[in-house]
Amino acid sequence: MFEVPEIPDMPLKYRASEMRLSIGGCAMVAAVAIARLGGAPILASRIGDDFFGGVILDNLEREGIDTSYITRIDDAETSVSSVCTNSQGERQIVNFRGTNLGNSVELPDLPFDAALVDTRWEEGAERALESAAARNVPGVVDAESPTPLRLASLASHVAFSAQGLRQFAGKSNLSEALASASKQLPGWVSVTDGSNGTYSLNGSSVAQVPGYRVRAVDTTGAGDVWHGAFTLRLAETGCEKEAVAFANAAGALKCLVKGVPAGAPVRREVEAFIASNAI
Image (cartoon, rainbow, N blue to C red):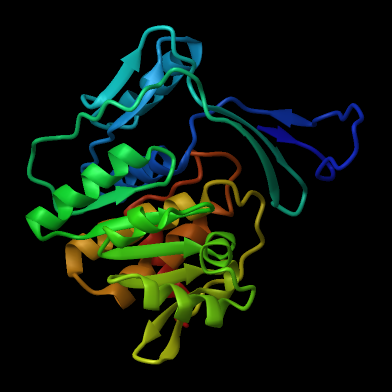
């Protein structure tokens, strides 16, 4: 992660004022968020037997994440991203998806209260959602772009980013895109839109759970924290509206702290933030 005055847009050399090496990625940051919020996450994933794979495992174990179902593969390269953040807290990400990671799937044969998947490992995500459906517990998709229709159709809850929803529905207007996605999918559908909050369908009308306006210093990972918080609270209460409100607060708090997973808040911080910022 590099902190720069402005996001690069030319083929030139740029100087960063700060640099940090940290773990990241949708499911990984969500798992850290769940652990800090009082849950007990198990992370299933694939990494290479390389330097970055070692960094990931060391950091996850320090966060208290169960890494028993992370497969470390010889001759594979771990997925890595370069992230540039500017003084307004916005970010630009260049991602290398890794190589030779394969598609073998080993998932926890353990009781669980909810499953959260992203779109980076479709085979594993599909198996996790099928397992959640068989157990009659929530199966949530962190629906970034692109989100395959088959994967989203297996979920009980699909929480799109704005970009992910527009790509999925082929519509730029979020309300129209939300209605289109809802017609295509059997589960509950929502879209997060930064400080504007989260939108879902209530019958034929769009319902909004307001967000929080904060002075962001780094938005990297805010969506991942949101999805972790949403899934945990949904498993606890079974109420989408309450889970969204909790997740909106957790995501906003992440934006106040540089770095991931450093900015993922703990439970008491989220509860205090909600109490002092009643909407």
